[in-house]
Image 1 (cartoon, helix red, strand yellow):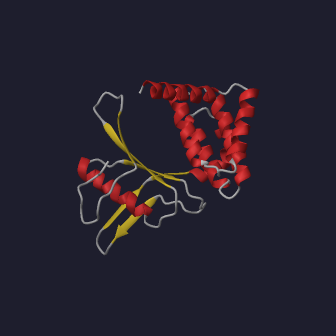
Image 2 (tube, rainbow, N blue to C red; image 1 turned 90 degrees about the horizontal axis):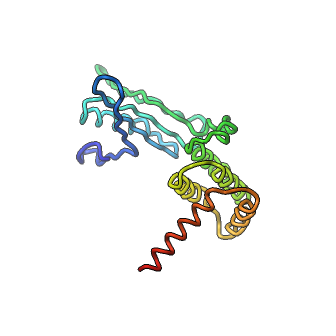
Image 3 (cartoon, rainbow, N blue to C red; image 1 turned 135 degrees about the horizontal axis):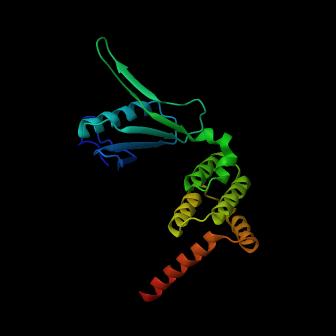
Length: 211
């Protein structure tokens, strides 16, 4: 959503702004601003500050600001922005999640049934295999195996399939090898997502025939 009308600094649009209500006795709500950043940006902390103060100015409540960093630089870890002059100062401290840190928790991600564990695995594998097509085929095949073993809903499965397919794109030369690996898995163990894809294809074919 746009957090303020057009101003001198231009339009500012947050990645995700979530409003949730607590279940306590009194009326209360939180604004949760989640900003996903995939590359090192020296102005990122200032941008987080701008979003926070504009949200505060509009709603008169400081948002819960969280930065999700998906870059490949271990040392880039912005968590605050401070600006001051001779008499005044303003600052913002915000939460930070570094996806690169999850490399040390690989086994935990593999065994975690939370869909976001698979999302993080896919992101890490995309970075790791960026320059190696064969390793990317191996990584994508393994992610598909994990997805096929999970008991996700049909919609969750379709969403994760699209995400992994988009993130770990293969060259035209590598696609046949990947498809052969998937076909081999299908014959060796139950793959929930295969049937999901087949049902989706059948629905698409049916709609086309009716038109």
